Image (tube, rainbow over all chains, first blue to last red):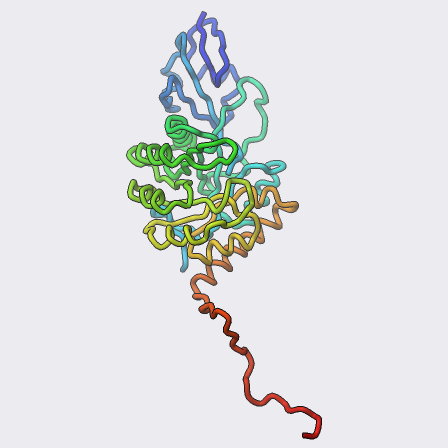
Length: 67
Length: 264
């Protein structure tokens, strides 16, 4: 079991999946998002290569209205 | 042509608008269209995970193909939060480098923390961002931010969202006179005359959100702001008449006024 923190909330994953799989499983594939993993940007080109690991801290963001 | 040039790119509109506080994205889009703005600010926030998969997306209403998006760091109180937010924005917008930096110092006043702002600006400029920076109306802070390499200096007219207008035109004038990069009033504009005054002072542009979004009729106010910015700019370029203290000067000929009908 892997524990990760996403946008401040703790989640459990049954196995180590890559970021592309995480995006699909959480219905984020159609959203324009950017991801930071443990303080570092994850380029879209690496979504298939980077596997989530225990203790990971992810920030997943979108553009919203603001001034 | 009288254009606004920021980081080497030319814009015809000197009005920059935000996308916050609107009723819905339909109203957001209508107001932006009425404003004529080409540069539009957006905020960067955590997305919902695993819920509302089909909720509307701001970028569908304000497409990056049509507008120059200006991601901001609103809500950031530290260098680290601001820098990380803009790195995420650059990834989100496919390498887009034009950003609005603001590092706040206080949730009550939303006044900028200049020390943190300067440090964040130094990091971002080194990383290749084109930084438009929100700052106080302190001319020294403005000069330092320009020396760091910010592409536009954006002093407040008054507190963010206050609608109090331009409280210190004299400081703005000093900043404008000293700056070699565009100076835009950001924050505090309440109505059209405030925007016109900013341009009349010689500001290169105005950035606003609440003044439009919180008007009773946002689309009509957006149109008013467009005209005010154009009018203010033209008045600045035209060069206003000198003020004559306590001295009237008739507009009509002094001679040839008809005489009294009564016999002398």
